[in-house]
Image (spheres, rainbow, N blue to C red):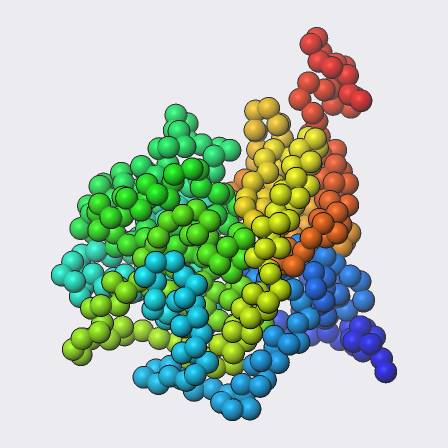
Length: 480
């Protein structure tokens, strides 16, 4: 019997043509595939995926921060098939079914504090959109109708729907769709490698209080923050940051939304990032790892306090999605969480995080590596022109570095990761949570030579060394 790769290979030319003609890929320069093949992934197993030619790649990004349990888990998908035999679909609009009820109760049992109410969505942007709408309606019901604004951080990504995009702090993603939903406000993020001039780490949280004061506390409904900010390259919070943010939110009667579309379900070694950094939000938004991407699903986990105004009289949260709480997705999510507990997935991340981080830290001897940061299995390397001054690359140089070399070369050598410039140029790594030392060694075996070549291509050299072809100046040490 022919293998999957052989079967696909026989029609690979046809798939390429069909992809170029009909498939509109997300966040993708379609012109890039006029002269290059579309990467077509046909199979996955554990930490690896295979393309239509049978070539194996280590999935250093968990597809998109979401295949937490690893690829090829037919047992996880089978839970959805078994559920379909009993009930393939029924809506959560005024109805309930066992898979959604049981999953909601389980999520509530894992969530911190009194976050006991689960509003399901189909994905992450929908979860953020729902949280922002819930915040607005909550304050209208509690006598503060002017509270509608949301404070987020610069360069943060919170989704693509117009409401979520108003919270997203990335100019290039916002401008094509303006005017956006009003109310989005932004403060400095927690990139402690590049603190704003004259600002200390302790002052980062205070910028949120200052923004609320400037806008007027009676107009601000929520603060939305990721435990570790994704866009810009895995910014962890400084010590005490979230505790101070919680105090600020309480002081001004502002809701704290922990956006954990990426950071939940073991990515940081805990069920939720709020546990890792010891804070209690009013809402958690989640998706991705909830099902390990074996089915689309997301949700908002809200506190009992937020549910109270909706429990009496004729009031309802006038919002919903057709497929939210889908019984097959709920069954798959439950099977995924079963596997997490049975196989010790969180323990695997906690045990191996130090070795993962040590491997990345070892790359600091490469001149182009400026910073290494992140938490759990969610790490980034920032690339610089000068390690001492932290000088970054301009837009043209970033284009040459990332799209002109790194993205293609890393993939060609068998590593899928993200080379990103939604801020300063970074490489992000977020492998499946089943990964261990073997995978870390494989990642390094690709990263090290590619970054060394990138240093040479971009003429980046160790501080105190002379570039090739240039006479060493006084005080400079010769290159080795």
